[in-house]
Image (spheres, rainbow, N blue to C red):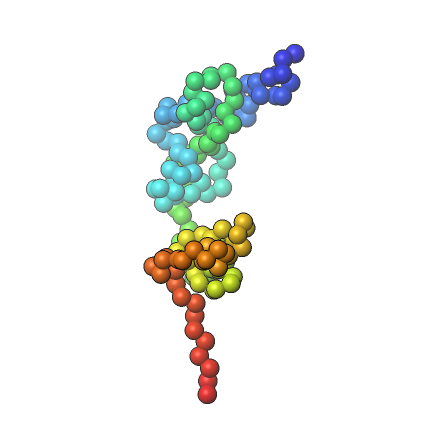
Length: 144
């Protein structure tokens, strides 16, 4: 028994019992999640009906694709739900946590390396930040 078979990488092509299509050969009535989203649609609870193999796996016809995308039927897709104010507020809070420096309280226009550095570059090592890349922290006015 070879090492390849032992590791289980030589699986049959139809390992999920769904029809498989190579890159660029899927019928027009099927679409991936990204293609549905581009058309303002969502799968709407339907199960995938086929697999789309990636470009790299087109040259390896006997191996199962490890980066396959699911294909959904366009006629069963539903329109995307509209964004509610509560959902928009929750997304803004989540992005604020990723883009606000905990030390200087500036909110940047890009995500900060908080996991590795713990703060923005200016607070971490003194590298000056471009003033156009962040919003100043809110001012607190005291009532007199």
